[in-house]
Image 1: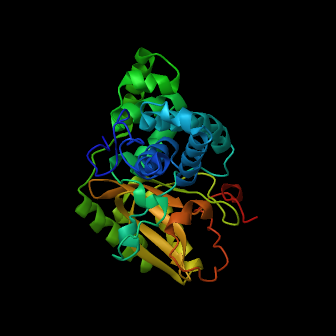
Image 2: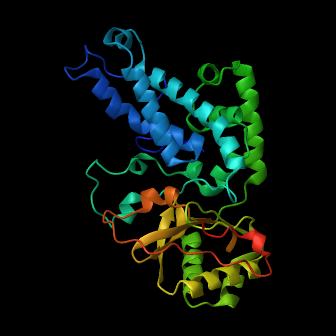
Length: 350
């Protein structure tokens, strides 16, 4: 579960950042470059949204630069200070986000992350890319994992991510959450139970990729029988939306309903192009219309059957999936009703 083994993903909370006596470089600039990836990694896992993570990290640096040079130099471990402030900002944001997501039209789905090296077809990173480049993809950003995190209280989520994923001791977690180390330990234990209860055996990545490839081909050929065969009978699909894009207000349940639903999507959008892409470190699919990404689909599998599909269609969440060029955007697609669904199950475009 730890992100610690991924290169550049985690720096210890108490590691001192080089100060003015270590280098002739402005220590604030060193902080900006050496800690930003750490903070983005942390904030994304805490919030499930890259946009909110960027905002939280930006606010953290605003607070750092609001201090005088003397105040900055008096801080023994700037890295620990930045992490503590970012953690508290995320804790506050989680409280307000819970209220916003409860009023979200349809079910809220975490923001998907691309593998940017894959997305850019092997073009080398020049260091000026999207902050998604700096989010380390491991099992702690798997979509199914993030969905379980959404069921936790803010304090549970922060305690669990800081301790179990980033390996911070409970004494330091307590200073961020504002509770005792013993209470934070209990919160993390409760969160761990939720994770264990929701976890299913994961198929090897190459096996998952093969199933998703077969699913893509069946979708493209509108082969309902093949799609049903790739889906678990009790599979569920969640499709969010936003702006001009409609959302399915309730999950689509059952293999046959999902198969007919997505075939209808293909019928209504004959120009839809499906691409195999890594989504949060797992095999997934990206749907493009006229060169513009309109849907990113993440999958969960048990053995060789798809058990969950999360189709992210909210344009704000698809920001990291946009190619460098900005082609003219076609009119947004409207999701068809699931088979046998009532009209109230779908939010029409605004």
